[in-house]
Every structure is written in C-alpha cells, then in structure tokens.
Length: 110
Length: 110
Image 1 (cartoon, chains in turn purple, orange):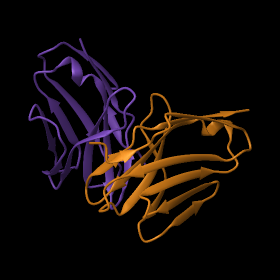
Image 2 (cartoon, each protein chain N blue to C red; image 1 turned 135 degrees about the vertical axis):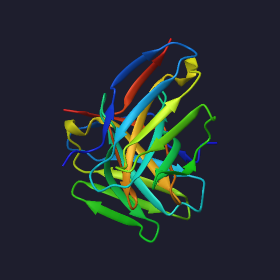
Image 3 (cartoon, rainbow over the protein chains, first blue to last red; image 1 turned 90 degrees about the vertical axis):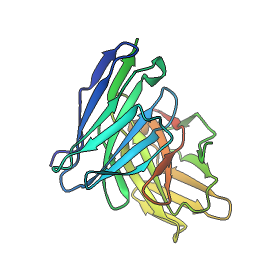
C-alpha cells in the first residue's frame, strides 16, 4: 500500500516564475491538504481539498491555488514566485482525523 | 498568531531515561491533538493522538497527556532510545484545519 507520494522532490525556480507541485494521496483517502514548512518552523496550512473542491483555506495569498482530480490526486500551483516562497511543501491525505504526510517538495526560489 | 506553541526548541536526554516534550495551545475549541515525528528529508510521521474527552493515551513507549484546563499537552517517551532522535511536532485541530507547533528537536545520547 503506497503512502502519500509527492513530485518532484526538489525544485529550483527564479522569482516571478510559476510552479506546480503534485501529490497522490494514500490509498482510500479522499481528502488532501497542503502545508508550507519554512526553515525552523512548523507546517503552515495552505488549503484542503475534498470532492474536488477547496474546503478550507489558510492565510495564504491568491497566488497559491490548487486542484483535486477525480482520483483524489492534487496539485498545488504558485504564481509569481517570491524569494519567501522557498520552503518545504508538504502534502497530507486524511481519512477522518489523522493526517498522513508525503516526503515533501523542497522549493528554492532564487 | 501562533495557536500552538512548543517553547523548547531542543532537548537532550540520556538513553534509557524519560523524554518529556511539551506543547501549549490557546484555542479552547481544539478537540483533537496529535504528535508527529520528523526525520531530515522525510515528511512528518504520525506518532500518537488524543481526543479532548480523554486526559491520557498510551501506545507502547509513548504516552500523551492532556490538561485541558491548562491548555497543555505533553509527550512522554520511556525509555528513550537513540532512534527516537528527531524533531517532534505537536498539532491541534478543531475541524478540518490542523495547527502545528514549531517543533522540538530531541537528541537521545547513547
């Protein structure tokens, strides 16, 4: 049973560019959440998708958008990248209360 | 506004002794609490959880205590092992969104 998988594992972009990160949830999980973890900080909630709709959103600007597909996989898109967007982006899938995380995508914005 | 706080960035413990990691929260609406463990280059891994209707939950060497009146929870690891060395995050939820602390880096000294 595969866990949560994310791609790519590492990414380097320049300011102003756009990026798309991908996530496949754990088998049987229908809810996907995205988190941003800056260096030395805990994961910060970006948004959550359920039944292909954004169900809840954290305190992130509209440059951060997402999508969930019928197979429950999800994408996180970030437009007009800023240096401050450099972080580890974690995808988590859930069934009821527990979150199960992928290994993350390390994004560096130069 | 940090709703979940871990005030100790690091902790060192001798192998075989007890490790106690602490976490405080501010939102009385939180009703579910979790601890995650994170190794470098990996996503957080679920460790143990507790519902607000309980004050203690035990799983092997790991026990989580919840003091609702003090808005405080703690994770006890007994006995501590070198493989427990990692960053530990506490998280709290009152619905679909999880709030994470900034983590405590535990080092278990052989």
